[in-house]
Length: 356
Ligand code: PMP
Image (tube, rainbow, N blue to C red; front, side, top):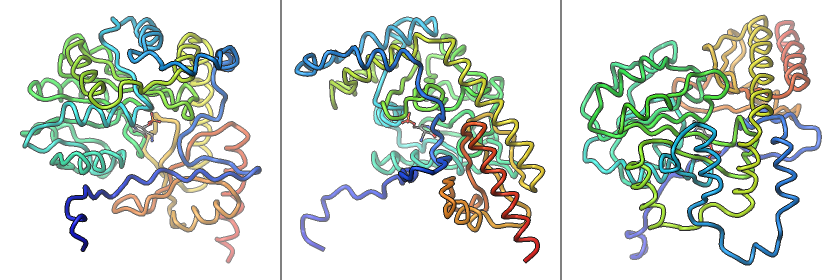
């Protein structure tokens, strides 16, 4: 080992889903939205005056903060925005998880949490999901330095009822509890209604899934003004200009079109429920996903084999070679046509396999 190496912060990074680029592909591997962003987004981007790019963007990201606050009936001081919810959550870890006690998140969950915890040297414990892949609320009643989990959870898609979230909050008044609501718009009750009651609650959402703007990188946190102030203090100690001018313009246009947003979410939920029925007929089982993906295992065929067979057809889904979940596929909900093609391929493949 070279001498300088011992002072290096060594990390095992998060592995993002593959971004293949084949003209004929069906891309169901990173929970993106198959529909375009609201029509106003294109207009806003076309109207952007390139000359303004000489100038720094507004460090307060005020137009976007205002639009989000007004959409959810909040005060501006209750909203923090960042470069995707990954950026927001990383900032939250840095700001709020500074205890010697371990933070808590499930053993099966968004695989970025342990990466951030390791990066920032935050101790953590990972209570196991039960056999049905549900978070056990009792596990979150123990000494801890903070709590985070997604609702619905990822990659399982399973939701926790709001009453259980409230129970966790009641039992954890002395630490910050973060609910990562990346997929909440596809049929889960948000914890936003609790932020006035619990000053230690932060609700984190994103424009990447339900608003079709993964490529723009916009995420936000909502909570009491004191928490948001602490978050901003850390942000301004790191990078003042996180939100660029294009993201601000696109974000505002997206939030302003409630009707398009609701219609897109409705279509995805409908396609998800159709896909569940078809997958069940083929011998797949899965929890009751309330997200824009289904986390499914087949009774006969190993997930890895299916993953590779699908990949050869340029149908991309996500496979995690990890304990407890290495026989599951996470399948993002695409358009009706894409899901029909997926089901048609799986039907043929499984039938051929049976006859082999
Ligand atoms: N939380 C969860 C649970 C996710 O699955 C994702 C998407 N990978 C994110 C947060 C981050 O999404 P983004 O940074 O695009 O907002």
